[in-house]
Length: 187
Image (cartoon, rainbow, N blue to C red; front, side, top):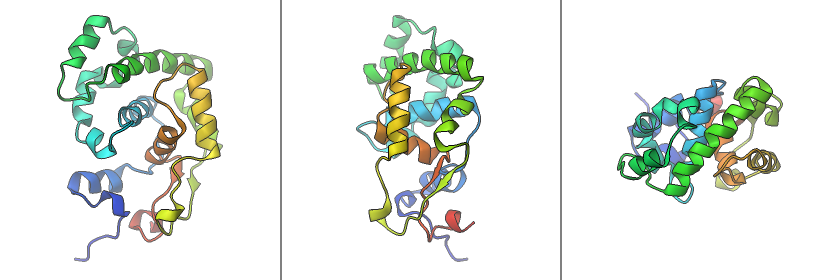
C-alpha cells in the first residue's frame, strides 16, 4: 500500500504522523482542549513542538487535565512540585504562566460565554485555508496572530507572542497550513 503524502515536518515518527493526521489543522471548539493547546504551544517557546508532544500526557496529569478552575488555585508549593516533575518542561516562568493563563482563561469564558467564542472571532468563526506549495509559503506569524497576541497579552495571558499564536492557530484548525500535496489538504 502506498504511503500517504504528508507535510514534511511530521515524518520523524509515528507519534508525529498521528498528531498530523488526526489533530493538526482540525478545528477545535472544546474550551478545555483550546486551553490545553494554548499552554502547550507556550511551553514550546524556545523548543520544538516534538519536545512538548512527547510530554503531553505528562502535562495532562501534572495540570489536572487542564482544568482551569483547579489550576488557578495552584500554590507556590504546587509550583515547586511541578518544578521537580521530569515529565514536563521544568521552567518556572512557563509553569507560573500557565497559572496566570488559567485566571485569564476563566475571565474570558465569563465575558464571552466560552473561550471558543472569543478565540475563533479572530478568524471570523471559520478556518482560513492557505495555499502552501513549499517552505517559502509558510509564515511564522501574520497580522491576525499579531492581533490575537496583543489581545491575549492585554487580558493577562503569558507566552502568547505572535509566533506562538500562529502555531496555535495552525494546531487548533483556525488556519489550514497543510502543504498543497498533503493528503489532509486534498481531503
